[in-house]
Image (tube, rainbow, N blue to C red; front, side, top):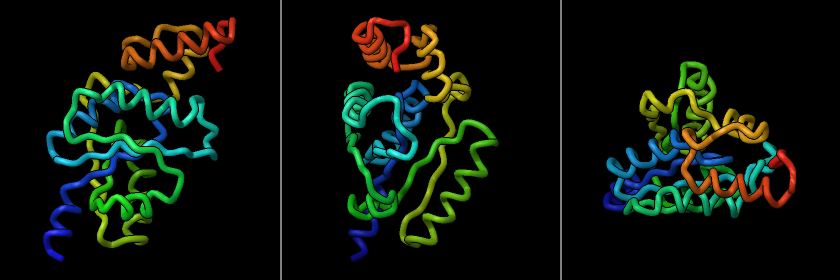
Length: 174
């Protein structure tokens, strides 16, 4: 029993919609991989948010963005996060905090997750300073207005969004 608990504590789940994955996300994943020998990037289906990119595409873009990292896996999920964490036999939920404004919401989520499962801990990481202002929402807005997003996202995301723009034959990529 004790070895199972120790292994759970060394496995971290970094959940999000990653719609699209940004350089800030990749920064958090890289730093998490140095701390946790088993890191799972959990890409949420999250139909309530009406994602910009399909789940399969978001998974593929995250996989491509972190392909060079050992101990990192990317999985999609469409159930309650705490259930996914328990299914994966993990003990840690990893969340990124960009600004104080993120903290209140994330603190509330952490409290709810602790109430749902006392064996799961939430740990917060902040991205490096040069990524603190980047959000998927802002990237989507810039991209839909044909702005240059190359400094905010991995090159695979730039290619995917350009491909979508070209397929639709319009400046809009939605």
